[in-house]
Image 1 (spheres, rainbow, N blue to C red):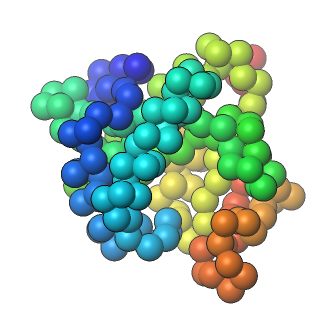
Image 2: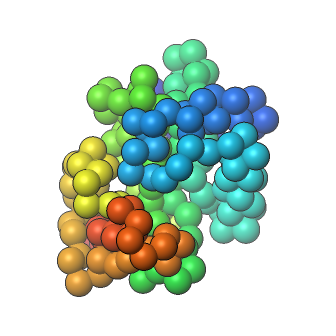
Length: 176
């Protein structure tokens, strides 16, 4: 678990599935991420992240607002996806419900997850997104990440011609 002044990053719970599913049905939230997510997709994603936490000691944690316990989305660091240039490397990521946008939650949560990753001894952390996802790119830049254009790639999980297939690679090294 990771805590900030306003947020708690923690393991997923059954109670997170319904708001995560609602988030996965929001066209604007999913705009740069893919098709709407079914409840089964959401449950499997939550279980996968809890399994990462068990195996690797970290994952994309459920994100809770400290003030009222509201589920806001997720944020954390997991092993990069197989078949990508960052396979097995620390990949930071986030997804927030639209009602949580524009309040600095993504940057706050990601900064805390990044600090925890440095404490784990990682020397570099990566992030990926599609070119049009300017909100995520701004969060990456606020974190101090820089784009590595040489590392940009077509995501192997997406078919040729899919408008979300091309991904940009960002990275940050351990602060000295």
